Each structure stands twice: as structure tokens, then as C-alpha cells.
Image (cartoon, rainbow, N blue to C red; front, top):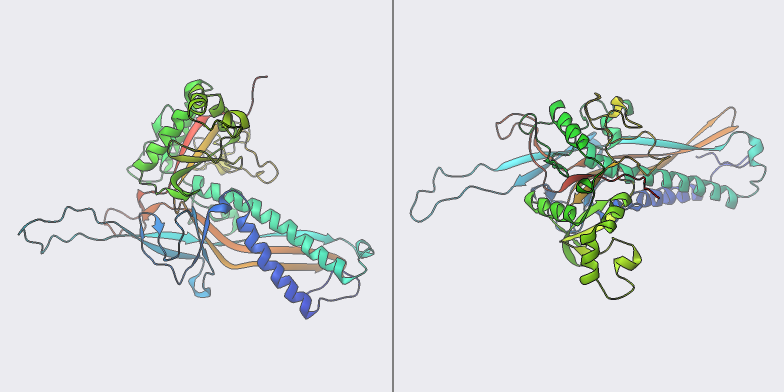
Length: 439
């Protein structure tokens, strides 16, 4: 039974059923709220095929437009993580004519995409003393109180998920997987995106061949430090051309969006503002744009328009990159735990969702860019203390998100365990796009 927030009452069986339905609703809506929530494909672990093309897990009913592949209902015996085998395409030349085929077979390239889940909880204080309940005179109000708590928790989890998607892309994993203070352990550490580009500096080079190490993070920070507040480093139409070209270079699968195959590129509003100031962007929509009030030159918008093979969408919850000396930088949350590494995570992201850092990160998203998992769904909880005076309602979700890096964690290829073999579903492109403007 579940103690009610009314005087001298308890929840009935029917009200428990109501709570169960509310839990299901809250859990589903938490995933779907936010820009990335529009691009989720729901998967049943026991039904989807266990092989895919590059980083994309293919299933018989998997929509091609999905950026996030969400695996639901981890079985109780699977523990906190599962391995999803990924089969890469054959690449050898084969033989021709009467050449002997025996002994020329190509070794299959099989890698494991690891997906971990961890529990995250939050609570809402419903009452502090019984005096708070004098206005609760009927069960309809009491149920409304429960639904209101559900709304608060749904909003909280949905905002967390909105950021966790970006953190998984920029840090490798959702925050509650790599932060040892969240209880999962040290098996998952932050690592900058392997396809990391900085305008004016090109792709960030590896320090050690295809190994996520401190040297690579230092290289990322060094490249980011080279960005300056000049037009060459601002976001512009040429930036879009670069991103689309690089997306195909990295074999990123376009998604079907608005009926067209295109690369989806997420940018901040500061980058959108710079784009609208770009004379080449203005010329394109002056010459080729619709001769109506819907032209971006009149509407001021940059979203929902196909240009240079991509669709843009604006999301100010995309974290910027901080370096040592920047306001808000903390070595505790940098990618290598040192002052030399970049920082993407913010401890105040729920209170201040718009990141005002100047080094903004555009993200190209292809099919299967994020692998997510959910275990057991959303569940309400309650804590009662001080002889039934203090009531607190909470919620918990068990979930995880990971970037779709292909890593030979088991040394299947014989070149060393943990070696990186590619990411074919996303890339990061940094520009200098400050929030401040001169008026």
C-alpha cells in the first residue's frame, strides 16, 4: 500500500493502478521531450538483429531516421551492461577468373558496442508537516497532488535526458555512467569525440594511434584554444559545406528527414546568428530562396531548410567547450581530470540550460549516433518520516546512453584491446561563436 498525502487515508487498489499508469506515462514522456527525443527508435533487445552496418544496429522495423537507438527492458539476468555485436562490411578484393579461392577468405570484423545502464533518482517534498494538508479534503485533490509530483519529475527527467544525449556524444557516455560519484564505478571514463574538427585547425590528431588517452585530450584542448573571435572562426555557410563533406568522409549514414535523405546538423543559436550574418548565406536565400514571406531572410529562422545536403536545427542545450581559465571550468569535470583537458559537463546545467561558453560545438548526426538503454521503466517511490508528518515522493529511472564508437574491446582483431576502429554516425565541429554581442 502507498501512504496518501491526505489526513488519515491510504491509497486504494484503484489508486495504485492509477499510479502505475501515471508511471508509464511519465517514463515515456520523459524520453520524448527535447529535440533529440524527436529522433528515437524504440528497440526490443530480444528482437533486433545483433549485426549492423558500421555503427548502426539494424532491425527489421528500425526507422532510418532514428538518431537514438533505445533498447528497452533489459532482462534481469543481463546485469548493468550488454554487448551488442557489430559486423563491419567485408573489404578485401576477392579473386577473379580461375584464381584459387581457397585460403583467401577474409576474416570477419566483429566488434562489441557496450551499453551500460545505471539508476538515477530524484524526489519532490510533498509536505513537511500535517498542517500542509488542511486544504486536501478529497481524494481528487490528493490524486492531483500525485500527478503534479509526477509532472515535476517528468519535467526533471526530460531535461536531464535532453542534456544526457549531448553529454553522451561529447563525453562518450551519459553523466551518471562516467562520474564515479554516481555509483557505477570507473569502467567508463570521459573521452572527447574521435571525429573532432576545429574550424581553421582541421581534425584533431591522435597522440597515440587510435587510442583515447590524455595526449588526445590535450590535442583537443590545444586546437580549441586556437579559436579566436574573427570571421574566419565564426560559423558560416562554408562551415555547413565542411560538415556535410566530412560527414560523408566518415561514412555517416544520412537520415530520412522531411522525406529527404540528409545529414542533420545541430547548432546553437549563437552559431545561427553568425550564419545569418554571413553574406554568402544571405546571397543564397536572396537568389534561391522562396519568393514569399517564408524566406529565412524575412522569418529570421534557419531551421527546417534543406541546404548543402543538410537540415539544421537549433538547440541551446548543446554544451560549449571550456578550457582552463574560462568561467565555470573545473579540472574535476575535464575529460582527463587535468587543467589541460577540455570540459563539456556543467554541474548547473538544469539551473542554467543555455551554455554561454564561446567555443560552440556543432554536431552532425547520422543514423544510430547514440545508443541508449532503459531498464524496468519509470517508478514512483515515497518516503515517510517523523511519525507520518514528512512526505517525499520520488521517481527513479534506470537508463544509459553511449556514443556509437566502434572499439575492439576484446582484441578480436589482434591489434590490442581497446583500440578504436571508427565512429560512422556523428562528428563535432567547433567554432568561435560567443553569446555576447556588441550593441
